[in-house]
Image 1 (tube, rainbow, N blue to C red):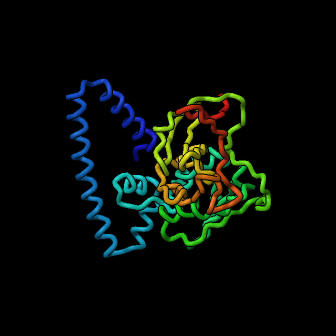
Image 2: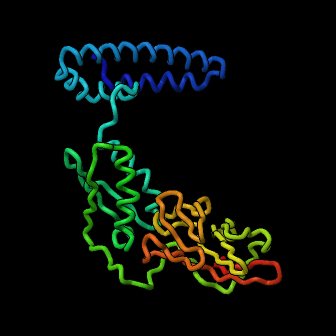
Image 3: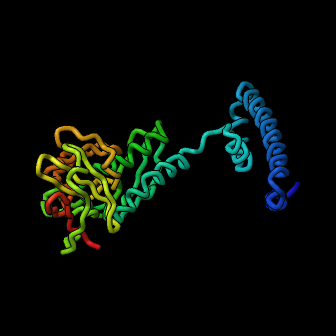
Length: 278
C-alpha cells in the first residue's frame, strides 16, 4: 500500500513542476485536473447515494476515516464538522475582539446544542461583555451552526459591575493640545455624519445647526465603523450589530456604560478643527 506521505510528496512535486510552465501550459494542466476532479466527484456522489440506500452505518464508518473524509470534504460532499464550523465562527469575530485587546477561545462543545466559550483579556471584564457574547459571538456561531441553541461564556473572572460611570472605551482619544483642521463647515451636511481620517485617527463629525460633534468612527461594541450606519433624529445605528448612539451627546442607547468618547471641536470662521493626538 502506497504511503500517504509519499502521495502528498508526489503531488507537491508535480505542482512545483507545473508552476515553472508558461501560462498556456498551466491552463492545460489546470483544465485536465478540473475534468478529472469532476469525474471523481460524480463517481463519489453516486457511491454515497448507493451507500445511503444500502447501509448508513457503512457510510458513517467510511467517512470516519480521515483520508476519506478529507477527499469528500474537498469535493464538498460532506459538511465541515461542527467543531470546524464553530472555529470558523470564532475566527470571524476574533478581529473585532482583538481590536478591544481581547480574544475568545472554544472551551467545549456539549452535544447536542450547547457551546461554551471563554472571553479573554479586556473582553472578559468589559461591562458590555454580555452584549458582545449575545450580539457578536452567539450570532456568528448560530449562523454557521444552526443546530446550536445555547452559547455560554465560562470566564474565570467575574464581569465588572455596570455602575462605573467613568468607563472609558478602548477607542477613546487621548486629549492633547494639538488642533487639526478637519473640514470646512459647508462640507458637513445638516443632520448627517462626515467621515474623515487624519493623523492615524478615523473620525466622524455630526452637524446639527451650529453645533458640531466629533467621535471615533468605531462602535464601542466591536469597533465596527459607524459612518455607513443609518442616521435618524440624531441617532446613529451601527450597521454591524445595531448599537445606537446619540450623536449630540455620544450616549450609547443600547448599553449606557459604553458611550462614544467625544473629541473637542473648535470652529474658526468657516473651518472646523478637532483636538487629536498625533
